[in-house]
Length: 177
Image 1: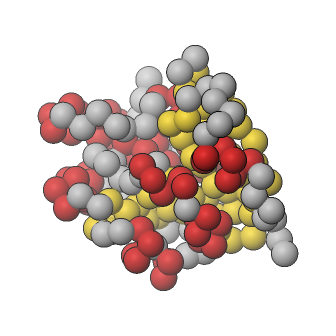
Image 2 (image 1 turned 45 degrees about the vertical axis):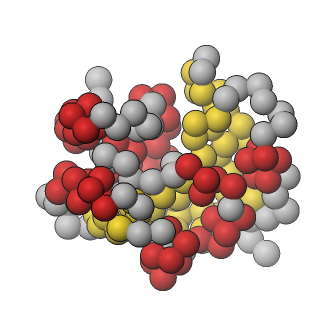
Image 3 (image 1 turned 120 degrees about the vertical axis):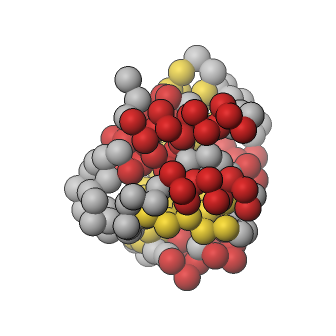
């Protein structure tokens, strides 16, 4: 069963016809990673209706600052309303390349927003030892440019995990220089 905030976000996604929310399997992985000790700053790219954010916040220590970025103004506003009860959660509206770097570095970064996964600049948003999560990958596709970038990245130690028959994720950590 999903946490109550996730259920609220899923209802908003259904109400608005938004179909690109993170899967329950990816959400469970986000919960697990958010629950790890030592998280000081956490971020998400691609808020959508707030489903991924809700999974992260369900296990994140309440004092840890969390920021999520959404390009669509309507979805950003809806997600901000969803997360309003959490004083450490903020929704930023805009392009992640513009609004997220001043908030960095992050100990956990979930890149759920479309083409963001294809940008090497994501590594620059991580603290040394920080964790990067990329979802929505089709299992078994070795020719994928996202896989090529992150599984061979010189500073990110990464692996691919198949979390369902239809979805794989890449989880990586920024190695110290």
